Length: 443
Image (tube, rainbow, N blue to C red):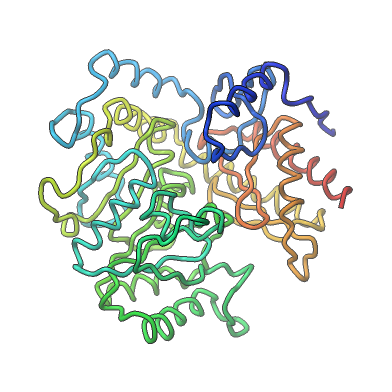
């Protein structure tokens, strides 16, 4: 049954939007005029009382859903004890307990040290510094389509949209970009039947290392295990095992940016676990504390060898955020959210694959767990980019009561809370298909 669109934004939302535009930076990019009032689980209500299914989880942030009661209680309990004590200068229990928990769920054999930050961008900055410190080298490899943040160091790796870098150059020197193993839209030529990841790594070894920079001068390779902003792109099977061998061969730090893909998003604690290899350094943020500002850099103990004072953060590892993160991990484990992410994610993939057969503009469906991308095209044979069409679908879905976000050149992402029910997923997918049908009729 088709869903009737709502008249949005409502009067209260319009009032807040007007005041927002009068006082807040114009750099904030809003996908649609949603003014949230409150949320519970995978549902949110706006300032006028309209209800929506949140298929974004605050851009993969509210891992346990909005205002999970265990997380809320943990924040309240910690706030009554103390709100701030800088972990750079003092000790406190929650910071230690969280580092122990992260070590317990590490994707490496060797034990970890953890450094806490405020955000994903700051985590990337710290990881880059650590790689330089440990290797004594200065150069890095990043990937086209990658998003790692907007601070100046992280921005030097971000290559998903030109607008992010416009008027901000020069960025940090020493970063070279190569194509991501994006098999649906290959940049490089590959032979029929060849794993496109091999073509990418041939380019790295035969062109970049042979003609641009010696591998012995490269400190780290920074990569998203599954690209987020770039289109929710899943790499080809051969890619990561061979990349790990290359990094080991040349003493290069393999830095996994798990800011979006980590903390259970793909049905495993870390997306790298799907590929059977171990990184040297991991960056985390977003879902780690169910919405509280927190990031983390985790590295093998043999790698994080810097001395006191070489890295610090006034607010990184804030007690409230650490308490929220501990509750987040407990909720994910006790409520079997990793298993739910796989079960509901597999179900969604099946439904979306069926939609692909029915709709001429769905070019590709890909993902793992609850990190799913749907790429839209104007022609399936030519794979013509359909940016405006994808944005039209997002807008129509919003007006019908489901929150989606676009990514890449013409994809829509599904990144709901890890505990989303199959019933809510069904409702959201029904709205999505209604929106696709309407948008296709307008082409």
